[in-house]
Image (cartoon, rainbow, N blue to C red; front, side, top):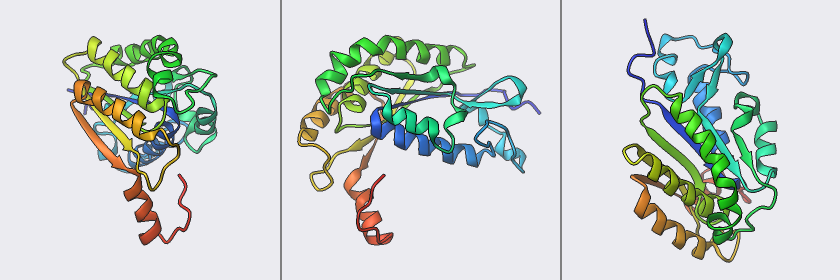
Length: 228
């Protein structure tokens, strides 16, 4: 049976601290569902697990499965943590694209200055992943709207991808800030600037509410101080 017939590949992008933490979890779960271990080796027990596996994974030499993921940030810290995490070794090392300066929760730094300097390196990796796809369905990006990198550089990347692939789906998983569970005082500015960009350039946005997640932890899981 040929599993490669009519694959509709998705390129996954994660940006900033929040986007990378959530993205790392996404890959843990999706790899587990497909029976792929942290080395990219398939150990599944059902043929169903291999069906549609090419939507999110490239098949490398030796039958290894490699996530079609692009990881970006303006500082190395979070990506070091992802690399050291449970599924950190499954990613293609070249697909980690990061700067050193950080965006300091400043949307303009992510969108116009620091982020603009790194964006071409990110687009090179995105292009490479898109070109290796048989029939690209679209892009999904996980990021927050309250920070500098995920919000500012994330929306910059979305607009650049929109320009280059106008007929492909652009989907976002956007973590929306809330005053109750707030990291920084400028979150409303960053979010407002981002939402404008998303309205222009995204086809579908899953708005994930930090406060609702916090409440689930607080009420249902009885955690007094939820962290990621």
